Image (cartoon, rainbow, N blue to C red; front, side):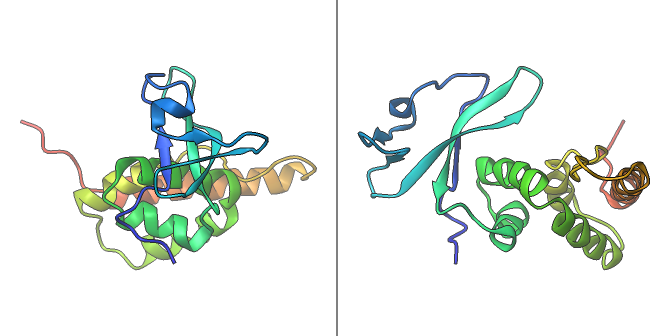
Length: 163
């Protein structure tokens, strides 16, 4: 079980960190991981791309599973956890993510601003489902599913107040 108050992702912002030492991590000689002061293992990863390229960072080992990532996205107060969870959910668990979003949207009359901001981390509107080796009809169905989820999110999300 994860602790929502702990970090599971360490990420640079506009490439302001480039080495393990920048994240206060120590590279373990001959290994593919680094350690923090508490002895937690971290694996290097390129995470989200906010328009200036994929950010350099680390994911805490063992990597969180779907349920843990979903909890980090919806409940963690740590921004890197929310963003990192969103990226891994899309990349590694797109089908489970579709089901979880459908269930969330089906059970909600509206999303408050906090939940809207968290779900917005997912940047819905693109087909996150794998396409390699799938027939065109299946790819199109996946695309329509993601398009529907984007529309549902837009319908339910809290709208920013405008003057």
